[in-house]
Figure 1 (cartoon, rainbow, N blue to C red):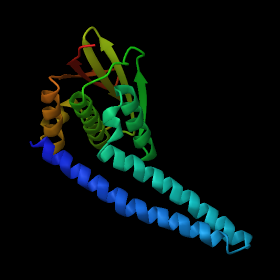
Figure 2 (cartoon, one colour; figure 1 turned 45 degrees about the horizontal axis):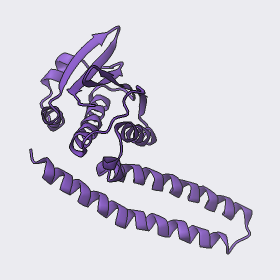
Figure 3 (cartoon, helix red, strand yellow; figure 1 turned 135 degrees about the vertical axis):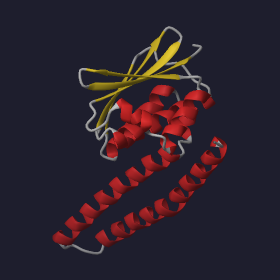
Figure 4 (tube, rainbow, N blue to C red; figure 1 turned 180 degrees about the vertical axis):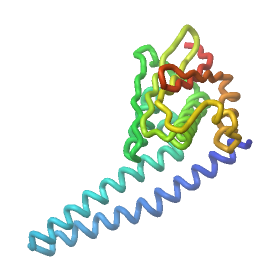
Length: 205
């Protein structure tokens, strides 16, 4: 797979959404502000306030969506900040990602490593939410020796690892390719009704 081509297309889509949809939202917000200055009707002002809050929520959701499609500033940030941003963005979309990052995970990754790790985590979470029929995932990030570990834990409903092994869709292929680029391994366990998908890859601190 040509990941460079994929990222170029992601960047184009993110820019189009920012320039076109973002600009339209700003215009709507400004129009509502101007309308609020031309009326003293309390009911109308209340409806305008509700619409302004809704537009504010929409703008925030759009911002997280754009940054998850092509996270410009995150690529210059550290691992913890990037994953906190990803979890916050998913929570706005109705998903629950409980993030637990150990204090010693404070080192900088190369742009390539951070980029692939961020994308891999997006793809893992999307795969779990889609096929695990769950809205809650606990993601623990920790270090064991010279290995960075990401432990995705969730209680599956209607999902099993044998079924997962049969999945041969594009999502599974992309995850496998990301793992290869990071020289990472994945281990799948089921303990007391919970699934653990643990990704580990070597680091140099």
